[in-house]
Image 1 (cartoon, rainbow, N blue to C red):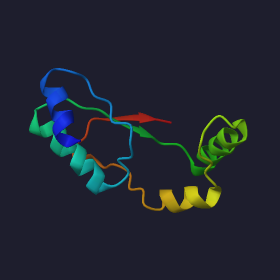
Image 2 (tube, helix red, strand yellow):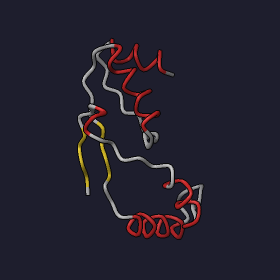
Image 3 (spheres, rainbow, N blue to C red):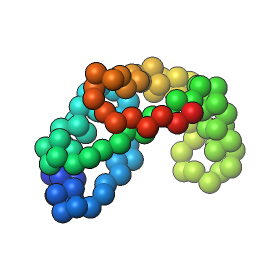
Length: 97
């Protein structure tokens, strides 16, 4: 996938990566792509309390419109791996709360 993204960026196409960059390692992978082709970037960081996220997940689950349901326990397990971005990673972070 990295080669395809690099080709799109080189062609001047904007690319949105809609998958987790929730660890230093996954963010480093993304950094390698845009740095390799000298593309500008933005890392959007949703700084929302866990209880708000869980409430949103419960509402999504109840709507029946999403093919997957996530429990509070699964949310806790997934977010247990989360590492917030830090300034020393060098990203242009856009914070959302």
